[in-house]
Image 1 (spheres, rainbow, N blue to C red):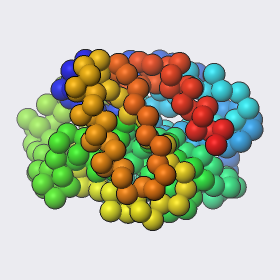
Image 2: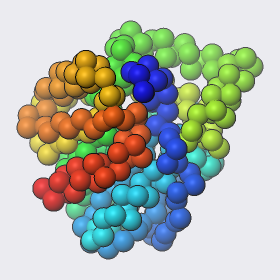
Image 3: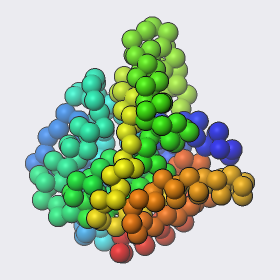
Image 4: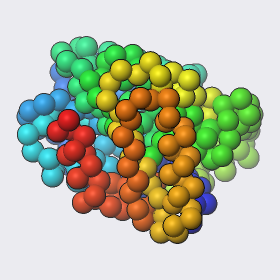
Length: 279
């Protein structure tokens, strides 16, 4: 894939590994939330898995099946992949979601679990690391600044995202266009267009880069690169520069891959997850 193809729907967080791979499991209890649903699989050390924008927990099915000895807490954001939006229907999304996952960690009695997040889930994972709720963090194909994933900045693209969100949710033409995107994007099917638009707006305004120097937990960053060597080198430089403030962060490219590295390179992704969790 080209860089444009890889990143064209990168914040959508969907992929061919999406909804159909999830087979379910025991829901965590007691915990009730109007923002997230949580399913628990397996036994052992606790790992929280957070999918990307519009994705459901099915993106992690291969990882969960291949890694016995862990208790996985699979987050499903309401409004994505078939769940009714409830409290995520309007308003801010990213910070409330991070707070709700943190509330789940406390309610479930988890002691600083490992957290792996893909795309938007990577932003949430990083926020959990910064808040001290995670014991170690893996970010999968996400930069500290959401806008930087498409070559912008929070101060520039963030403003445009506010306008775009208003267009997508507040006009008939915009809603038709967003519905078309949802229908045609792998992994986004049955996701709520309003929630997607609000999440895109929030992501474009998030920049966690300045906070990275105060991160005190181990950080691994896995990111997708294509088959073109020059392009892969440029992506690698971008990620290394973006995460330079995180002392000791371990960055690993996976390629050739698009945004869904766990589907494109499952064996290599599994190996990196094993290394991350073993630490």
